[in-house]
Length: 164
Image (cartoon, rainbow, N blue to C red; front, side, top):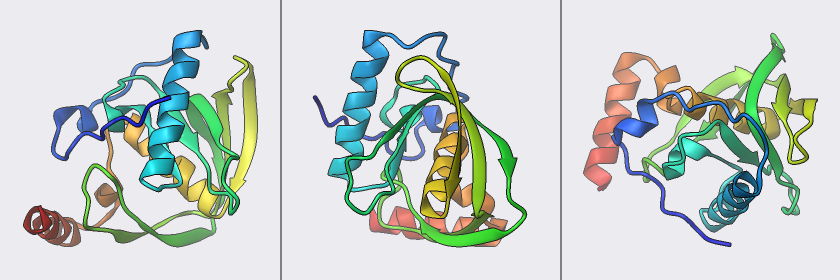
């Protein structure tokens, strides 16, 4: 397949809501394959369609130690989130050179269309949960730094600008 370029911040598509996926087609399967190749090339533990300019509610996540365990999701939504939070250092290929510690629910139950076109609910814990939530943010036009205070967000964006 293909490694696709990631949109550079502040491309307006990164602030746009992605469109729902009505069904899983061969084209969707091909986009997922490209997304996995792109995620592996970064390297990263997840990627959402809007990050590569595909404005569909598509995401892939692979937080396995061995890799090759990517979960393909269309229209993912959090059904339930744990009260317990977990902080993790997050970054994005759309804004290289910076990162921030973000606290998110430690575990989430997510509903999505899987690669067979079936509605699935799956529990994600730890880094898997962090990555899924990070990707859903992208599908909703949000970036990880939106979870920071205004002061910390402004500092991070200034550092990113300097790094470019």
